[in-house]
Image 1 (cartoon, rainbow, N blue to C red):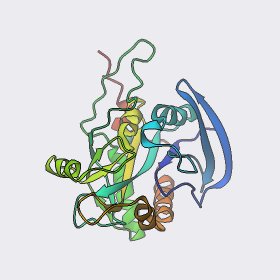
Image 2: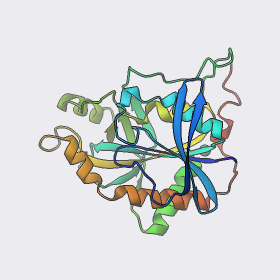
Image 3: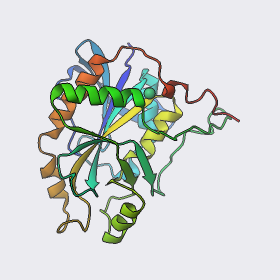
Length: 260
Ligand SMILES: [Zn+2]
């Protein structure tokens, strides 16, 4: 069985209600074992990994990003749809806003962020545009068909966490052009690109960033997510069913000229 699509979800999204014939599989990778839920959406098999674990117990810096991406690659996954719960730096983007992230600023210092060197070879991949254009197009069209407002384009700043940011950190990110802040989208997106997997992530605003309103609590973050998990599950389902099982994309050629 080949699974061509993987979902990696963040805070507040631990199950996919529409997944049928669910089976659990432990995938062995050179970076460790990963528990993956495999199920059926329509006539497609998809793999599902909640990146913080089902009990939200894995801290952002302790998520085994390489093992997760490699496990999906091992299953045959060629495209990944992800969610990144984020704080918003844009006053008009309040809790519940959905945004397609198209750039990142990385401030993490605590996580393995490359598969290379692999088999004695070192790849230097192009991440000018680190997210998949084909998936972005499909996400926008599918959202529109559902009457869902999915904004296009945001720069996501990734910090190590698990604490939230200081007022000064948020001001720094704002001056650098950041729109969203979170703790998990890096290095997931570049690891996918390193294995020539199409990858896109929907930024889900759970709260305003630190200093933009009164104090910020984890409870508030969870409350604001509400039923958004179900909405995004329906969006992802629509995208999966609208894409052909195989298609060509620039991401699939990421390694063609990456070796010196
Ligand atoms: Zn792609």
